[in-house]
Image (cartoon, rainbow, N blue to C red; front, side):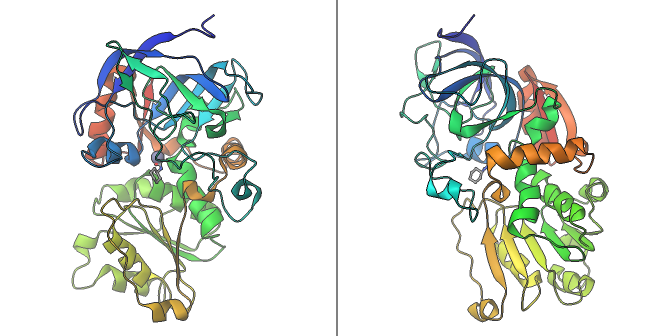
Length: 377
Ligand code: CXF
Ligand code: ZN
């Protein structure tokens, strides 16, 4: 039994911005109060990992650290006061907390739990790390998860239990990207039957929006991406029309979408993270009621300038974290939709690698090849 002891295991450490991760031995401390030590079963790469991997300056550029936040694992041991899970349970960690007790958690209006110092606090709740390298140097956590390690320590507010017979690779997808996209269509836009949807960026998040819209019976799901290779896989998630902005001929994307939707889409989703594209999405939605949902993380802090008169006439812009899903209650519901053969999760998994080849998963994502690459520990 390893409970109560320091565990020595392998982790992929990010030591320098934009440089390949280095697999090293590390020490993982036992979980403190309200914490859970998890043996990661598999993890995958979400674009936010790449975003932070590239970040070379500012308060959010922390080194060395263990990236990774889309994962599933089995509970190895629990700290004091943890009753929700026990050794052997399968758990899905999530970057967004869900304490269940704060005003936000008790409200149906939001999923943004106010536990902790926000999602950018890269240490557990007491401000210290559970990771050290072999020189005794502290290694930072990331988004409260740090799944690019054989073992990690996660606060009980950042995980949920999932049935142990649920396929683990599919559970991994529900830990970030897919829940974010499906949730945005269901909880944020609340896409209805017959409505029209335009999605900018057909990565995993964008295609999960399409999947959510498909299940809600949207009549048109327009996908926009610079990579025409996405058009084929997009069909599997219900995309009915594909637009490559570089091959619209004389027309602009805005004109093409307005034509396809008889005046503008009911719902537009930005899944890239560029203020300029958010503005373009806003122009593609229907005057009077069109809603633009922002999912992409804008890292340049560029302002989004829009005409307030269009807002007065009824257009709106909104956003969400984790698709408005409350992790502990909504992730198990998504898992059930998969078991009921409604939600397509299988087609998001396009690649698989062993942990030692984790840098190949970075290559694939950087080249825009495929959707999720499952990294098996
Ligand atoms: C993101 C959401 C926005 C802030 C950074 C992390 N979450 C997951 O990818
Ligand atoms: Zn993510």
